[in-house]
Length: 155
Ligand SMILES: [Zn+2]
Image (cartoon, rainbow, N blue to C red; front, side):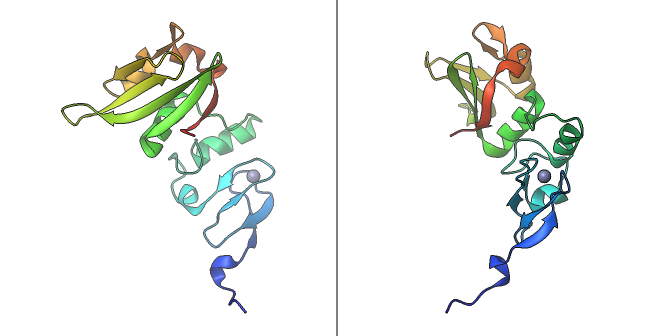
């Protein structure tokens, strides 16, 4: 018979966002069936940072929840997540785009935007350059961000 360890145990604890009682493991991990927050102790300890497996910070999630809005990353959240995950994606107008942190030839970290349909690649010097100047379909990404979908780490 397998010994049951503390790591197998599941506890009834409140969701860090909506406070409903949910199932959490010893690391306070547990997906909330009510608000959809992916609970974990790292987010609890770093409430202003974007941390796996969420795309927004815990405090941002609390704010959106209180406003009745979905846990969608804005462009700032998305770029913060990019620096955490290294590779992100989004969909706009039927086309998927990959956004990646890469090294240029001088080993500087830069941002690469890849259009999966046209195979076109655009490079940006840093996060501000990307946020202000990235374009999709000839439009600034920051202007169409709310119409983009499937924002996630690269699948
Ligand atoms: Zn919840």
